[in-house]
Every structure is written in C-alpha cells, then in structure tokens.
Image (cartoon, rainbow, N blue to C red):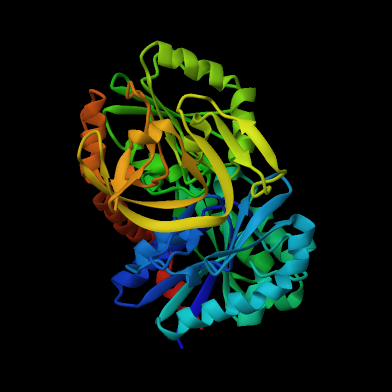
Length: 482
C-alpha cells in the first residue's frame, strides 16, 4: 500500500485544489506514482471518465498533474447542487439520488464505505495519494458523520496539513481558531500548516508565522506567494473564472447562470489574445457591442431559464440577434434555446413545462437517465474535428435538428437555425481543441493566436510545481505521509 497525506483548509476557496495539483506534479517530477483523492466534492463542474462516470473538475486537473487517466475513485462522492437546499448525489461516478441537506446528512454514514473503498484502491496502486479536504475542519457542527475532512482522516488514519489563506485576511485567527475548536484526537492528526496566496514580501509575516507555530505547536511548512498564472488553469468555481476583457477583437459574453455547470468550456477562449471574454453577472445588461453570446451548461435548465428571464437577458439576446449577433447554447444552454423544456417526471425539480427562448425550433423532454460519454465529433459548418464529451439528462428534437451542429459517430448532434446565427450542442469541451477553436473563430471573422491550450495547461502545471518547490518544504510535507 502507498502512503497518503491530506491538505485541509481553514475555509472554502483557500486554494486547496491548486495546492494539491502543484504537490501532485512535484511528486510526479520526483519519480513517484501519485494520485489525487477528494472524498466528497460539491461542484456542478464535472469531468467524464473513460468508463462513463463523472468526477469533479478539480480532480480531473489534479489527475492531469499526476499524469493519470481519470478515475471515479479520485472523487467517490460528488454533490451537484440543483436548488439552494438540494443536490444530486453521485457515488463512484453514478447518480445515486437527489437529497436535501438534512437528508444527505443522514445518508453520509452510508457513503463512508464507498469512500474508503475508492481510497484503498488508489493507495494499492500508487506510491502516494494526496487527499484534498472540503470546506473546513473548523465546521465542527458538521463533524458527526463527516466524510470530507477529519471524519475521513480519522477513519483512514491520514495525516493532515492545514492551509490558511492570507489573501482574505485574518490568517492567524484562521489557523489558531481552527485548532481551538477541534477536538484533541482530530488535532493530533494535524502535522503542520502552510500559508497560501501571500502578496508582497513574505519576510513581513515572519512574526505572524512564528506566533502561529508557538500558539498551536504545529510546524510551519512555508509561505506560498500568490501564483499569478493560476487563471490559466481550469477553475472549479465559477466565481474564480477571470474575465479576459481586451480592446478590440471578438467580444464573447457568457451568461453567468445561477446553476452554471461545466463553465470551464470558456477557459480556452479566455486565453485567446483576439477574444474579449466577459462572464455576465446577475443584474448586468448584455453589452451592445457583443459579437457572440454563449449560454453555458446548467444543473437546472428550467430553473436557470427563469433566472435568465428575470435578468432581462432574453430581451437582450433578442436585440443582440436583431443587430446581427450570434448565439451558441451548450448543453443546458442548448435546451434553453428551444421552444419548450418538458419535465413530466420532475427529474430536475417540480414536474411541468417551461417555455424556452424560442430561438431554435426544437423541444427538450427531460428523462431520468443521464448520458455520460466522451465523443469525437466533426463540426458541420467548418468540417473541423474535435474531441468533447456529453454529460446531461434530456433529449432534444425538432425541425432545426435537420441542420446539425456536429456529427458524432455517424449521427447528427445539435441544431442550427436556418440563418446560421443560433446554434446549440450537447458537446462540452469543444474549445479545448486548437484546430476547432481556430476554425470557429475564423468563421466569425476572428483569428486564433493562443498557444496550444493543452500544452499551456501542462506548462502552467510545471510552473506551479516549481513555485511550490521554491517556497514550501515539499520534502517535509511528503515526509509526513503514511
């Protein structure tokens, strides 16, 4: 069996996912067989594994950092929020149920078996497993039945390194306060701490660093400066997606839906020097000089249709099209473009029908079964091939399907309006393909100029590993693994 170490954080969004990715790549560069693991993740940004399962996008990036194929064992429990109080529960890659928060709390103890099974499989075939926590171990009100942080660490006997985020302020209180509310047995598993996202001269924090060591008795593993190229890596939280506003070039606007899913489709466009990409937030109007509107995926198509209309974006899109603009809907966004979305069995919430935007002559009927598959496609308009994936429920049909967006394994996929300015597709990941992205941009009168997207991600992962090695005591962090 291999060894394992766990990175937990003093809160959400302290940079755990990026830290694990950097440590994974650093371990790989040392010749170790390494795998990422996150017992429980909450995200609507999912990746499809080759065996037809799904895991969080952060674990997909970490797997890339490890040089490993995606496995459902890397993220055995994935929660995909559908409403403010309920989420779809995915266990080892497959949908188990939809549960509200209280229902899930009762379900968690039953999931520990699957979590440990997946963890043990990874340990059995790797030298090292680097585990990422979720949220914070300071949430002691959630400690009973916990499978994400100390509940897992205790059950699997995995040592912990605690990461604090100095960028948001109060990092001394974050770390000392976390220790103060933990019980002694949990605290005994914490082998030290590190400071993340430091800006400026790290020497200015020497006294604070020494204070944390003295008050907690934990050793410090270093102070990690803010990694400036983090935006070039796929983000798991839509709030972390950076706008790439540039003067001139093609102006692309992605609608920031309330249940946005798989928004990392936009990442390759954000890196194009000839593209100005904006994530439109609630309450903002669509800029009048927009060239292309992208309606992204959603975990709740009917709910986000209501959200879209509440922002007035349906009116904005109609005006955008009158000005000669283009619209692309991906997955849930494709479903929204049709005349109607029907959910007779309540697969996404209360049963019923919702009027769509009426921009494509198609209708969608929601179904209980989920399509999870990788796909090799050919874009009909440009004849350019690309690799993508599908992750959705529902089937879409109608007259505009006679003009497909792409062809996949001999079948028509997606739909295009007669004038070619409105298109929809279930295929995620299309813009990662450098050739397709260049062809799509050229079709809109723009020129691709970015370096190869996958090559850029690989180079940034190497740079992240070097950054981690330069500022943290990686030998000591890996040394506490057992």
